[in-house]
Image (cartoon, rainbow, N blue to C red; front, top):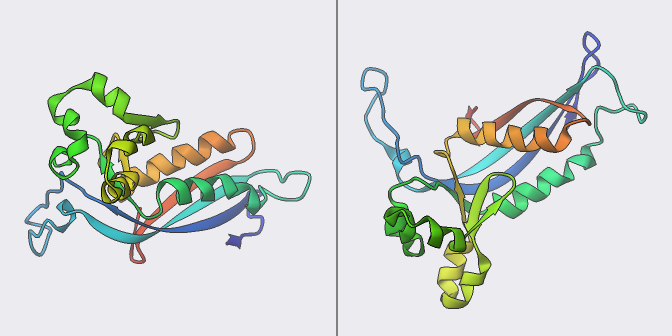
Length: 191
């Protein structure tokens, strides 16, 4: 957590959130003239120790002398812990899903009615398996499907950053302005 002083009448604060996750960038393509090799490592499901840095700003401080109390970002910590930490984030349009997650074969079949009964949509813009289906699964299958988060975009660091920005901004509307969200896929790579 870091607070910055007033600069040109604008006060900024920043808070970081760490988590572990996996994802797959199923549509990865490299330009041979730019890449040193054409290894498409991100097309494999793989994991990261990620970090999200949320930056807020305001022209005026609240009655407590703050842009926002850092503890008031607890809603976002809970979202990260409950929905992203130790989860696999996949694009719902990833063609490998029916193969690796057989319960989701209805994606491949285009059976939206069955999918509507299988998936639970969350207001933040992602899907999870409806827990009512767990009764039909073995313990190891429950562990696999409970850890799956489906989004309607390829989960690149850029897309994840935009999604998380939108979530924070929607919640803080009227309280503080989100100036940006940085998504660190690794300590050396961020969007």
